Length: 112
Image (tube, rainbow, N blue to C red; front, top):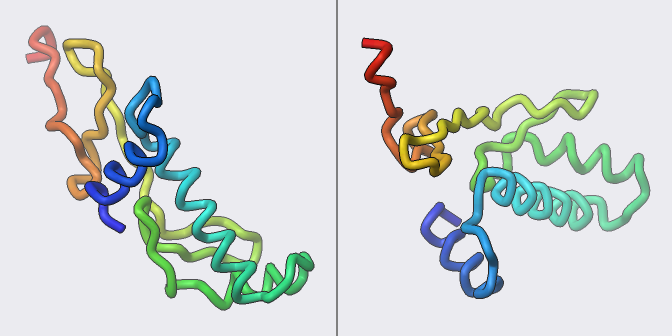
């Protein structure tokens, strides 16, 4: 699912949402997708079976926030952090990385 498909699905499911989907929404959705795949792979909700399945899914899933890869402790290794910036009009936009950006970074005129 790409960003446009995600936004369309979100708007369809939550037509009265007060806010547009943000990065936290994307992370929560991605966590749900990953958990679903782990449970399917484990065919169980047993902790050991789920840990084994989680490790087996390394580099086999990509969610809208990025590729899924963890180490033995569960640390996510691949999903990049997104940098957001409050724009001159007050809106908060993702500005990095480029493939996740929704706006170009704004430059403070006083900083020039």
